[in-house]
Image 1 (cartoon, rainbow, N blue to C red):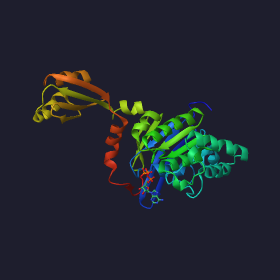
Image 2: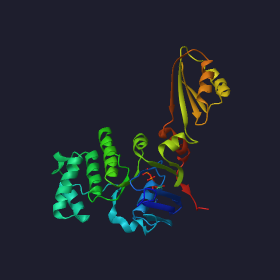
Image 3: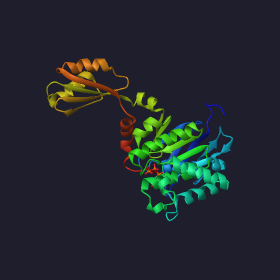
Image 4: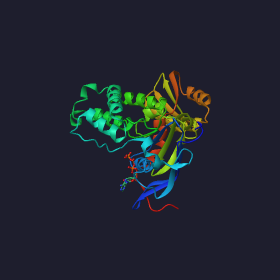
Length: 320
Ligand code: ATP
């Protein structure tokens, strides 16, 4: 399969629960060995989309096609590893026995099962808990066992619904590295998450959904340098700035936003197309500048811009 073809393509997916339109005409393509991230506020429709993708829920409309449309994705369930949002392992079972059970469910032979399970236990730093019952493990370690259970059969497509939830920063880092490793091993990864700082480092492609609809899609660089992107300038003056001058500065420089974060610290938001130097020259006119920093706005900031007006809840009613 060439790099330009898709491993999974979603076409016009719709799903409603009664009057709630959970997923509203979403389409996307996941390329082989891509790390594709679904982002969006609570209730945006991410888990519903993922559940439909793996065949747990039927879409009301639309199709998920495998490898350029040859087959339905659900027909390739054995090639998919799935970490559900609602984790469900038997808590009174030991870690190694749990993983052996899943390995055999996935059709691994007895000898492969032992080797593969041992390998995952070591890889996820769970050796000291191998014989412990799951209920005695921390939430984060239980989460690692659940992740291993989704990866034992070396799936071609790994679907992870909120893989970072419950993990401390060290284990989140372990998870970031694990996702990169499984991609290097040849797998394609589709994941949903809320940890934008991790997704910014990890994802090849991001799709932000809100109220069941696609809001933005692209690489992190495309999104951050696109029409919703921009720059933030932090200008620290030698002397305090009179707050009453801010509307004047705003008008002079035609900036998108300006705040006085501290008496002598002005923070300015510029659109992607705006002239940073011109703006700085103007800001210089307001007093001697002590320090100055410029940075491209983050995925987190863009996410807040596009997702903040969706907090009123899901879309109700029928699609046009
Ligand atoms: P979160 O980030 O909180 O996990 P999400 O983006 O995964 O949210 P979904 O769980 O897909 O969102 O939910 C989308 C909408 O569909 C929500 O309004 C939710 O209440 C509704 N919903 C999901 N599953 C069902 C169901 N089985 N029955 C009724 N409504 C449902």
